[in-house]
Amino acid sequence: MSEGITVAWHPHPDARLEAAIAGAGVRDLHGLLRHPAVRVDRYAHLRVLDRLHALAPDDPAVRAGWVQSMLLSNRPAPVWEVARHWPYADPALDPAWTLMAAQVAQVMGHSDEARARYRHLLRTYRDMVDAWQKYMDFEEAARLGDEDIARVEALHREAADPYVREKAAFALAGWHARQSPGRAFLLAAEAHGLKRARLGPWDAAQSERRMELDRQRQPLPAGEGPAPRPLFVVGLPRSGTTLLTRILGSHSGVAGLGEQNLIPSLAGTACRDPGECNPQLAAFVQAWYRAATGDLAAGARMVVDKLPANIEYVGLILSMFPDALVVHLERELADCAMSIHLRDFEFGCLYADDPADLATYAAQVRTQALHWRQAAPDRVFPLRYEALVEDPQAALAPLLAAAGLDWEPGMLAFWQRGEQIATFSEAQVRRPLNDRSIGAWRRFLPEAATHLRTLGVAV
Image (tube, rainbow, N blue to C red; front, side, top):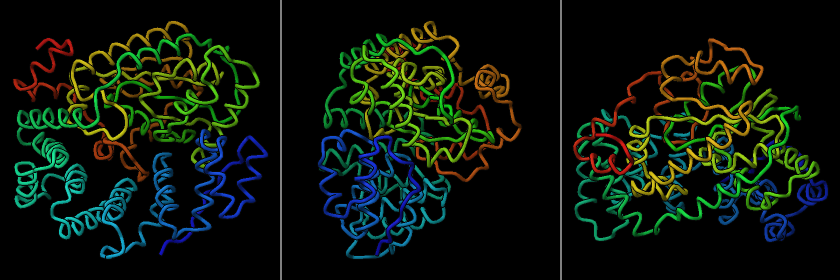
């Protein structure tokens, strides 16, 4: 069974809330989960779940909430310390948990363990389409046999359930991208259509309002803040944010936080009102953010928060953190769009299901980035993905200078680090820097021509 695992959390800045969490028993912790102050406080909620799991590790509901919260906060290591003890074959264990264990092993860089768990699951549950999708996204092409591909082709061809057909199409799109790019594009288009029918359309007006509201904020004057200094990497998905974070995180004074959803959480709670920007609120937000990331920062001088969607909250960042730097990573839209098209994003990104919506969102992002580059040129830095790949030292020179950091040759050895990677770029950033993905959109022609023209790309 599970063993209770605890994290060396930093104290919550609300001393009364911290005392309540630290001293509560199982019953009181369940009550805290329902408390309004905890439900809207992402860090407090995580802390309550972690303590509850430590006290009641075999409660299925507690375990489910704990696992979800730990993974969403980019803390897979404690989850793996629990999941690695789960036997491959356990009739009492839901296969969804076995799949999760395989994914966490993958995130942690334990490829052989992940492969073994995926293969065992697929031998036992031949029609588990979610497992096939995750496995084919993870596995090297040479290790996928003809029987594997035939099984997923059959799931796609014979699916009575639109969900099965959608997931099988995404799985096959990833496979055929290496073998038959044209078919890969068409399979992904089918999958996105099915996904849109299931989840509904993207709300462009809501996205526009969110960024317009953010542009009403007034940045704090640039200045010092309590260590570590936060750096936010923003932009479109698949624009190279994981690569940049890995390079920066290989600096001796920098720690990568992965994808944190703390800033969007603040935008919907403590920082809802763009007109409310006072020193007391800013001081609390800084203390809260640093407490929520303190265990991941591990004493670094700078931390990198890599969430592309934080482009929508640049004003909030600049108005709450006087020392924050923001990097807007841009990539050739055609390459970015093709990479987005082939992926099945699990959270948000509904604009990815239609090229017209992606074109609209890309334009919104450009407007937002240009506004803040002009409003705070000493704190918001544009960076081209292609320039980063061509000459990382030169491309990063302005940013490193602003951060007070020197270039370190070890930053180019980012791919040799064994740290966790919980994004679609997991496989790519475990290889040396290369330019193979630049201009790759042309491989998907002519099937992708209309899609690309909708994005404004000259084909």
